[in-house]
Length: 138
View 1 (cartoon, rainbow, N blue to C red):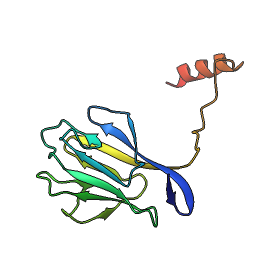
View 2 (view 1 turned 180 degrees about the vertical axis):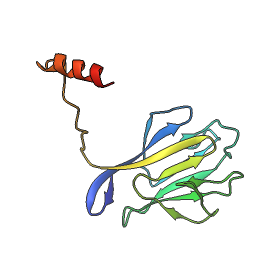
View 3 (view 1 turned 90 degrees about the vertical axis):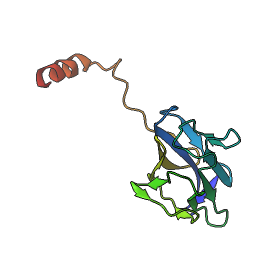
């Protein structure tokens, strides 16, 4: 659990491109290591990824997440911008993180957040009209 803007939150990465596309990776540790070596928290088998490529750190005093390139060969990009090796780069919700061929999106949600589901159209008496209109205008 993190604190973001004074609210208890859950931070996680969504894999947008890579072997585990769609997977959510909870960032609940003070240090989340990323790399090819199997002792990393996030293991990427991409040959463009260094054995110990990067680390995402959580500052427990203010809840700020940052990423550090651990001197990798091919670097780390945040929002299509190469970050400096060895220096913490502050992360914000919805940042895109690119490591090798993998793309991650940082999400921060209030603790207990449940997404709003679209209405269930299966029992909608107007579904026939809706489908007919959709067919007409498609």
